[in-house]
Image (cartoon, rainbow, N blue to C red; front, side, top):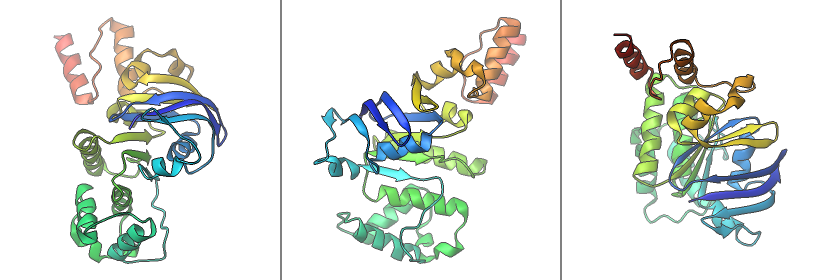
Length: 265
């Protein structure tokens, strides 16, 4: 689902205009990124013009678009005082009136899609690790089969193995299921590595919009120290400045090391 904002204001953000392409991973970087996710989720009122797949959002049809959007916060926020994982999922489906033919199968499929064993459904939330809770919150969002996933700091708090797991899940959701994914992160390294497009906020406005790699490498905005460049980008730019060698725009530091080695021979 493509999302288009035109002169939208709300939650302390002003005059926002940008496009989130359908079926791609877009990053949000800078001030008030969490607030922008909330505006995108339609959970709060805003002023301005918003289109979803070229259909304008109005008060009378906004509930239709909300059903196609899944918002996953950085920390799992329990809505119900239910400790059993399976029981929680069942109640979640009923509360949100999600149409499902086979409830148990739907729950198991969602849990497996985020890389967890269905055995976790027999456990209590009070026994779960931070990583397990975070993955289950993503599974809950997938129950309604949303066209858009809004993720707040999806990689924060994970070790390297779980980061790789999450990246595989997101690429699968994008490539196999054609989900439009929006990631807010305060870490430029995460956004450089995992997103195709980037929206940069400063204070209360959008200051940059475009392809992630192009913006991080070419925009002088990041030279102001207001927002940092990804470490790998800063290194590649430094090599060019000091030696004149124009290294390829790699995402993996191992590939950059190989490039440096071959250029030094």
